[in-house]
Length: 311
Ligand code: BDR
Ligand code: CA
Image 1 (cartoon, rainbow, N blue to C red):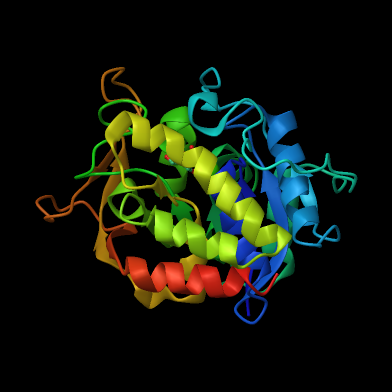
Image 2: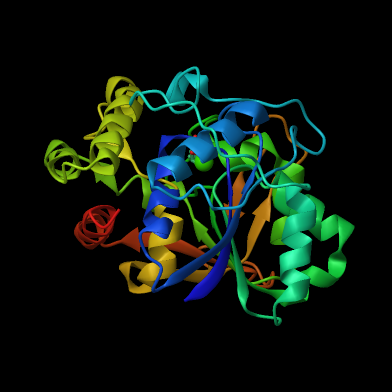
């Protein structure tokens, strides 16, 4: 299995991404979960990550508290999508498992220094504040990272928090800029891909039909989370953004994309947080990321449903 650290701001779709990882020990060894402020403030993202691990029967997972605000801007949250708690939908008990001691950023640095170079993959599912802070604090880790497989950005699909910016990148564009300039190999799951994995009614029914507490909770989470895209855009269902990252760690051939240059807009208020992706390779800027464009959505949901049924 590949060693990964999930960096997250749960979020119903983050929750599903975590569950998919926990259900897949043959492919994924989860070293720990690091929490960041994003969809909701940090105290709620650390709460929600613990709820999800307890739901999966895994109170042993090390969960760390990370940065509570972006590097240079005020925190923007997304209760309008995820609800007041960030994990609205299912009724789940308050968590009792403790947080791990120490700061998320130090945990990330320590794990990258402990294991052989090229063996630890970072899986960011929220704003990139923790990852950028680790890179700033310990520049030596950049060359030790196997890959950064992240959910963020969008190009042909536009943005979901401004016309040109996706939420995770918009919340902390400075952090995203540091990550994209780090030299570490990057795989991006942008809105162009995540808006193609929609929880339609039959897919939601398939989660519910698993019949376990996990299956039912995932059905209820995606029911809740769906409201927003359905009412606002007439989308056929909730887009499962973050699970694209953990699905890639299990079955990378579900996704196709291009290895291109991606730069982050950090100065213009109009286009702040835009991922300027040189899809057609019209510049000679160096490729720094594999930017995904297509996904086998049926294959993705087959994998997800089969794995969730294991928990
Ligand atoms: C991203 O923003 C959050 O609301 C989701 O959890 C996902 O990580 C989608 O833009
Ligand atoms: Ca997220």
